[in-house]
Length: 280
Image (cartoon, rainbow, N blue to C red):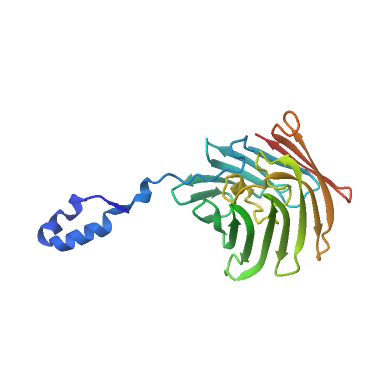
């Protein structure tokens, strides 16, 4: 459906001399889609009505990870600032501008991002500079992604990565992660009995989930629904030599299992440890 608005100042003279032509031009150029008045996109935030994470800080033995500061209004993520841990130069700020069919992502100090959304408000394609990501969902949860890294100067394909995610009863239980069409590294996740009320990403697995460096898009509700329960254990078996078994525990702002998650402790079988600190 289109809503037409008459523009007499533009067409008055032509209407007098060429009435049919003026009518056709007016129909083609003075009509605007009813989408102009449609509600702005409102992604489902992973916290689902509970307190939302506003700060994420990592400590300890870490892979490449970003710390984040997140700002919301009543229903949407408005802004985010991220910095790569251990690299003070690699940081950027994002601002979000919503329209009926998508979101404009304006970055300062970081990569250009252009996103394509499905009807549920999830990103199905994301261009990060020249790199291209594709995301697929089942029942609103991310189930597959792939990434093609392209040369910044010439645009040719340089490398690739992909992930396949498996769920049971709404819980993420497996990620098969592949780089450059090699053998997959399989991450087996054991869910805990603790409800994921704050909608947290599984700690330290953003690369395997295809959102390294833009985890804030997940916390803005643009990369699907969260796992129903928090993760208790991650075990990986990889032909690339990456093998570990980790136990994960949590601390709370009030009585166990009822307050906000304030701390995630990760203990590896090789004696290393990491932590993620959350604020709300």
